[in-house]
Amino acid sequence: MEFKKAVKSSAKLRAALFGPSGAGKTWSALAVGSGMGGALAVIDSERGSASKYADRFSFDCVNLKTKIVEEYVAAIKSAAPR
Image (cartoon, rainbow, N blue to C red; front, side, top):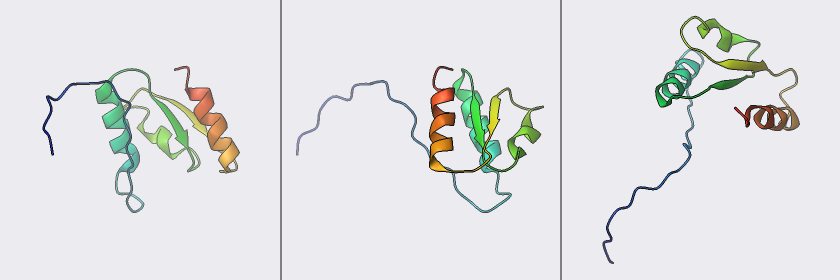
């Protein structure tokens, strides 16, 4: 086993938030995203529930209708240029 000098490299955040209904997953994701700077885009699969935080955070939002994989993929691709 050999130790090497640590070097900072850029990487994209990989995170998962999970918990029961009402635990604060959406709020936490918006708070973390806001703290990182830049634009935020939310894919809302719960009938517009993320929009209740629009007075606290600045973000774009799309509401899913069918919750099928293809719809998620299309939403992610749509958010990518942001």
